[in-house]
Image (cartoon, rainbow over all chains, first blue to last red; front, side):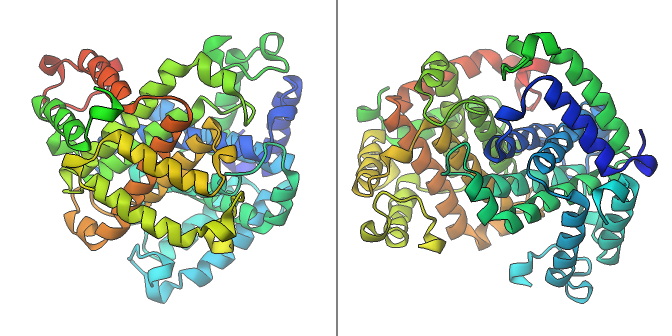
Amino acid sequence: MTDPNTTIEQLKRQVKEFVTQRNWEQFHTPKSLAMAIAVEAAELMEHFLWCENQAKEVFEKKREQIEDEIADITILLINFCSQNNIDLSRAIECKMKKNAVKYPVGKCFGRTTKYTEL
Amino acid sequence: MTDPNTTIEQLKRQVKEFVTQRNWEQFHTPKSLAMAIAVEAAELMEHFLWCENQAKEVFEKKREQIEDEIADITILLINFCSQNNIDLSRAIECKMKKNAVKYPVGKCFGRTTKYTEL
Amino acid sequence: MTDPNTTIEQLKRQVKEFVTQRNWEQFHTPKSLAMAIAVEAAELMEHFLWCENQAKEVFEKKREQIEDEIADITILLINFCSQNNIDLSRAIECKMKKNAVKYPVGKCFGRTTKYTEL
Amino acid sequence: MTDPNTTIEQLKRQVKEFVTQRNWEQFHTPKSLAMAIAVEAAELMEHFLWCENQAKEVFEKKREQIEDEIADITILLINFCSQNNIDLSRAIECKMKKNAVKYPVGKCFGRTTKYTEL
């Protein structure tokens, strides 16, 4: 599986199989999955806790662990979508349109100001 | 775009275009993106803060907002992968193999015990 | 030290001494401490990830670990206040007055509705 | 109320009164309070999301909001302790002793290495 030839649907199927085999659907309420996503996101962030903003070398030294954290968060997100009938690609397309309105190129080129303060 | 016909690579391209148009790559260090993912994950979780574990109706009432949060987290994850040469599909495949070893079906069928306590 | 006879100032002194002995003030920027607080908060939450809302027994089984997490978050908060000249007691008093306005007893008695939706 | 003359017990009483007046104890399970702490911690962190590590001016511009976030997290922690019979001062004293063993001055002077990697 590589990004150019893997669809979200294929990832959904793989995650679903893993969960079903373990009889875990019963635990995967939206609330519990949202909590699990937040826990994993904090684990990813912990790798960068005391380092400089630009520190590329930190990244390379821990690449495997970081890729594992990224994967764990994504697996949970995909699981969340499967359990709750969310088409992730459509949700992303839809949100990116909203983001484009919130952050018009002319106003936010090269700036990180939050849309509420633009 | 729908899940059966959207590849991760296509999502990467869309996110990259959005970021490049705004000249935002300069801000998207691993550290900052990891922080942003954690912030968005907390926003998703907040929707479920005071509700019962099973509360399906909470989900349906806020479906659009929740789908937006899910999309935002995924957009950041995809952006993180683009910026750091991570093949997300490969990372997921690789992590799911590790998870299968950590959580063998026989030991964790119908149980949520953490692998360190199995 | 027990709660009836320990002031915030005394806790501040203890934390400051620990940090100064290790020459750590240089790392304790507001940004880094805020990240550390979020990381520790996620660790606290992880203890309750898959359990029922009411589960008192989970708490008792892990009381020592949970007390340690609570202490770690508080130590970081106190450190944040010391480094940035925040009088924590005054900040709490001030915020509780705002909260009392946001959540008037008459409107939110026995309800968890967010103030923005009251 | 100021730090030199405010005990943790006094803060506990104030928070308890606020919660009792609103009949909110029923919602304040350990799980829900832990989630609320994580949500507030992410809000604090969001203020520092795109800024430089050292950025003191960000802090001063948003001092009031940041003090409010710090207060909110502490109020929740104190509430957590009240609800679960935790003496916070004792827990902090106890955890600082453990931290002193994990991070001996000689090994971690001027370094941010995690104790697991010292």
